Image (cartoon, rainbow, N blue to C red):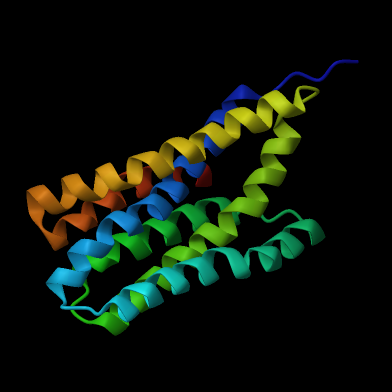
Length: 179
């Protein structure tokens, strides 16, 4: 008996993946602005990149372990929301410490989304595992590519506060995943 691919689920997971990875791509584009706006040193900028990397990668296996123990579908909307809210909140940050905190929150969202999303995407692929996971992965790649463009538009039009606009698509994707 053949099991069909659940394209609706994969599209929704891909949308979440796009929103999560948009925030991964947003940070590098944001660094020159933050360096100038807050007069940050290269060491401080490097520390932001380190915090982003550690919070989004190093703790990801913990979320994978939790996801393997039992289904945790709440990680999907939570991950998108935390990744987006952390990056958007930089629009309100007036200190380096707050930016570090918000980058960490975004990284935790990124780390929490990926394991549960990959597991759910795998289950939604039916017998076409490679095709399904490839389709899911496209969402993340598109998001990573859109991140710098989204940040550039927000900053160019509205300045630092414009980063709050990142919340809109993030809330929409989180809401769809929650639903």
